[in-house]
Every structure is written in C-alpha cells, then in structure tokens.
Image (cartoon, rainbow over the protein chains, first blue to last red):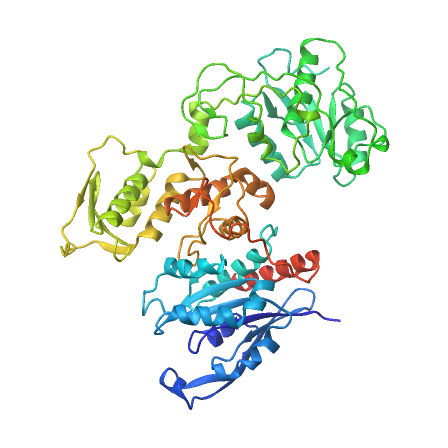
Length: 181
Length: 419
C-alpha cells in the first residue's frame, strides 16, 4: 500500500499559499478559489474557500500531498482536518499586511498543537513591496514563544525560495539527517 | 618489519583499509592538525602499519589478504565489537583519539626498540556487564610526547596565536581531538594517565584554518557597521578602495567600486594601511554618481565567506558549543554548503564545531565556513546561552528510520526538479 504524507501551507489571505503549492507541485494544483465576496475582495479577486491541493510523487510510489489552508477565518474548522498526519507547517506571512506580527501569532496559536508535535518554517512574502518588518524583527517577535523556526524572505513564485523553506523545515525536524543528493 | 620508520622524528606511515574517503580525510586532518604529522596516511606499499575497518563489507577477507601480503606489518583492527579471536591490536569504534594515539605510539616505540610490544588486554567481553563491555576499552598506558606548539589550543581548546615552548598539555586537552570523532567519552580507565598531547600548529598550518577578520576588509566593515548602528548615523569607510558608506537605518551598504573588486580585495590583508572611518552628518545624501546599494547582511556574508575560505576566526573554541541566536535569512544569502543542516542542528541544540562535522558527517571546512559567516553577522556565540536552547526536536509518532527515509526522498525529489 502506498504511503501518503502531508505538508501544510497556512497563512493569511494573499500570502502566497496557492502560488507556493503551484510552484512545486507535480500536478496543476486543485484550487477551490471563488470570487471573493467579503472583505477579501479588497485584496484579491479570488480566494481559497476550501483548500488548495498539489502533490509530489516520491521515489517508491509514495506521495507528498501539499495542502493550503483556506485563507478566510470562517473556514478555520478545516484546519484540524487538514493538519492531521501532516509532517510540518509552512507558514507564509504577507509583509504588506497591516500587522504581520498579529497574523503570525494568530496562526501560531491556531496551529499550536500541530507545531508542537511537528515543526514550523516561516516564509515572509512581499518584502519587495514592503521591507518592514525585517526578518530579524520577526525573530524577536517569535522569541517569547520559545520557537526557533527558520524565517526566510521568499517569493512564492520562485521555486528555489520555496524549496529552501521546505528543506529548512525538514532539517529542523531531523537536524542530523544525512543526505546524499 | 617495515623500513619506513626507524627514527624518532620520522612520521609513522599508516595505510587505511576499508574506510571511505570521508573517514580517511577525517583521519588525515586529525593527524595533520592535531598530531603535528607524527603520523601520515600512506599508500599500501610503503606503510608501516595498517588500520583495517572490520565493519566494512568483506572485512575479514580483506584483512586476511592484507595479512598474507604483509605478514610483518602490524595491523590495527577498528571495529564496534572486539573480534572473537585475533592477535591483532583492537581499536574500538567510535575511535577515541587517545586510544588511537596510544596504540600508534606503542607501535612506533616498537620500531625504535625492537622488543615485542604489549598492548594491555581488556577484560573479555563475556566477563563484563553487557553495557560495560560496549563502552569500556582501557587505553594502553602510554605517554605521548609530541612536538610542542607555536600556535596551539589552550586549556579550553581555544585557538590562540602565540604559545611557545614545551609544556604538558592539560588533562582534557586531548578532548579537542575527541570531538573529531563520534561521541563516546573516555572513562576513568582510559584517562589514566592522560596522554601528554600538545598540539603544534606551525604558522603555515595555522593559516590553513585560522584567520583574523580584523586584518581584512571584513573586520573594517564589521567595525564600521557596529559604529554606524551605535551612533545611528551613516559611516564612511576609506582605505585602499573607493569610498564605502554604511547605512544602519536601512541596513544597506553603498559601494562605489564594483563588488567583484571588493570581493577580490577580501583575501588581501589590509591592516596597517591608511584606513579611516568617518561618521556622516544625518541627511547627507549619497554621492550622486556611480556606486550601488545592497543589503549589508548579504554583502558581509559574502565577504566573510570569501575572506574565511573555510577558516575560522582566531579565538574560536573548537570544543565549546555554538549558540545560534536565530536562523540566518538563508533564502537571501549566498548559499554555504550544508548551511541549512548546520543551522538546523545549532538551532536545535548547541554543538561544538568539530562535533557538528562528526554528527553531520561533513568536512570541518563546511562547518568552519558557516561559523565564520554567521559570526560576521553576529549570529553565533560560544558563551551566552539563548532562551529556548533546550527545546528539543518535537517527537514524531512516525518511526525515526521511516521519517528519515521519507525526508531523504522529499529532498531528493525537490533537488531533482531543481536541476
């Protein structure tokens, strides 16, 4: 029987979850975007109302499933279902939002149990449009939580950026992982 | 008996059988830097002694063949478990440096004094407590007298520049060497008496893995950046280069010269040249013509990588744990080989430089490189404990081997698509 593993992408609306999944997925991502009808409309024309889905086939026939959580808070009930069995959380934060730190804490709290049992890597997007807060400030903000997660500036359209973030997550989970690439 | 080593000053030539290139490199580095070339790796034909890895595939056949070919050559059998019956010298893995050196010195002594050597026998494993038999292999009682230091490791294992004359090494100095190898600790039996190991690093050797950032452009940029941050004003740095301006508010650097020229300058010692820093008035604009601006972190990181070239700053303690204050922004910095792995390890737990190389099975130069660039950005220290250092990796319900297998597959997949 094939094994299936999950990698979860979370973050506020417009942070780049759908794009990040599209960037690394083997298949065209299955999106359940719909035209935004609420406050999201001000940010982008469509938004994810259920989830994004992509996948990567691994050696041996196994699959890594890539799930993007819905950006709208009214779909929070989906998050527990999505994270079950996940190997780790990629949290994407949009630096142009009015209070990215608040976003960060919201998602850290929402996924606390999952993060505590796995690991977290944070990607800051849109830093070309808004340089502040800087990555160091995110680290400072994260410090009281006791988490020492990798926090990188990323462009979700750039495959290399998304890969570096995933690699950091995997090495965080198994620091002495030996590789022969 | 072999003919390669008949004088006390000649190095003992060692042939390694059954170990991979990485292990050979590690031993070579160990002999070169830590034993002042009292021992050197050599090819099969000329070696004085052979070390056979008995945990390698077909090791017994290889050993037998080797013994038949060189019947007079002493052989050290390295293995996790003591061979059931064999008269060759046994070296328990993980290899303890003191034990290896002691055995080698006894053999070396036997070349000088043609009397049979006597390697103390351990208590047969079957007479010991199982756990004890796995751990305790007493060392032969040998005094090791190695050449003394010009530049050496001090009592804390800190690399210092000037330390001359002969003196006994502190009891734990050999711990410096231990960290080259897997983690087993010497027990009470193995440290009585401690081998008197003093490590000499000649000037030529010193330059191979030590450097002083203060002598290079890197040090001047770092100091200027600190000054700029402290005063919260732009700082101009003048020297044997075109003007450089550091801007603390935006954390950027403006350079008139091409970056390629500056990076080329990175390897040239500039200390003693006419170099000055100047605090600029607030609001003073950047020169209008030419020049380019970039992140000072990116610039310093790259500059430090060029300057360090696999070396570490003078004063670095090879044995002390390294505390990483937080992950560098690795998606926007020049990649350092194995940087992600090292950062993950140091974030998870403070580990010394040499232990890091051992744990990750990578050459120390990669660890040194990462340490040096992280040090240039002020991200590492060896004294202050950071909050959260004790946080261990989360416990996964997945079996460890399964998880590692999965992660390797994911990494391989990601990289395959990247190519």
